[in-house]
Image (tube, rainbow, N blue to C red; front, side):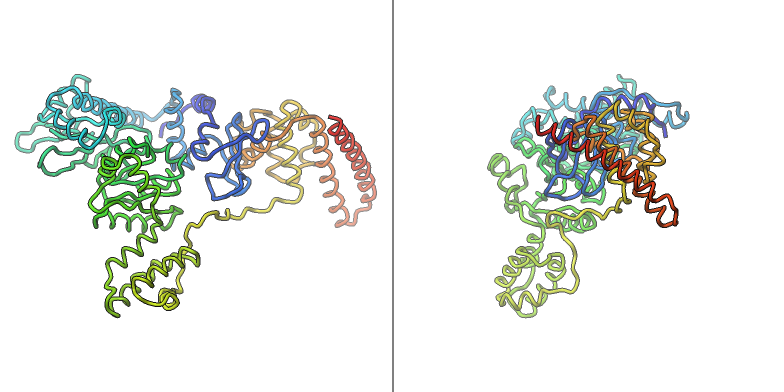
Length: 588
């Protein structure tokens, strides 16, 4: 795989506004001279323990231990590898990437994909212009207007129209230097078996570009006009487009979903566009496919809460159940927006405006309640046998609900519908199996306890970073092997001594990255002054002497008394420095 130059990576890092980038995932506030903090986007918490240093472009959570830089943050929040994270940031901040020398075959594959991306983008532009400029597309414009969709919103989604011609697109793309073979590879044309000629795949249809998370067009969803079948026709699975891997509108919804902490999932293209137009911008669609594990993973990357705004018919309900099954291994909270029977989100917006759609979203119910109501509606509640069958269908549902107010409420609902006492209903619904559900704050994974003395070493290193050149000079004066007991903290001290403020970028050891991120974030909240640094240095030296004394006693060495006298003298110097600093603070 081709690699980008280190200079390219540095240019991207320099261009990133880290506060802006992280603020899309969690609300930040200033918490020190150079530190911002907020709730951790990597685990549930109510008290902020997550901080960033926007100058060094690193983050650290003091609760769960998550650490990294701008690229790690994008990798973790977007679910991509380093290369994709680098390219996403380069696109966003308009930085030109330069490649290292690459294998000729890899270079040829890259150039081929870039041409197909360019062809698909050119095609989307051609369809969009044809929708708004041609007389042939008048019926399509009328249909879209009848759905309540405005021209500015449709243009934002690049909605277009394919001419009802066998070769109009071919003629338009040939003018751009693209070949028939490239049209076929991009899923835009196909070859006739009878006449051995190429013809446009999409003709006389409203065109919805299907894009990846970076907004690059991968294929199209096409809606027929009139009674033509199939009503919807997607790009075929090909080199660029793979059915079920993406969500419609995700590139436009991503930032809004991150800020809202939720994402709304619809079925149809016009449903997504209508909700965006109504101001519900955190909405995505299924791209006309059955829900897949890849799409559920994409939903989880967008937000922790998913509101299912799917049609109320049986297909929509089945999709909701499939979403629940696929979401179980993760930490998605599923809710259901109750849509009127026979109404899709676009029709709801058209009938009730933004307020009507907004009410349905805001009044969404937990998915478990939807499952209970569905089982009650489907079951026979009139006969003892039917009630037993309904209870059997409900037991797996209740097995996922812990003892809580929600469980009590659902038990009361079942008891009322089955005409049974609540106590009896609770007993009949009880199951030995149980499963954890998302109820709010979750404890982070346990972290290894630091070795004795390590907190002092970390505190000193953070102050050295905050003090800049003064801190680097202080490290240069010390015997690091003598004063640092922890291997990682000693290696971090050596790196900071040698590279100073550039230590975050000079690191080459992956083991050091989490520690350095933590130190830079901690340093960003410190007030750097020589007195504070001196006091922490005394603490470091006292901790080292304590270690020597313990080792000497264990070995029966006679020099313990000399070490103790050195420690007493160092402690007196520390106390004097501390008193002086305290008096200066009071006078100030």
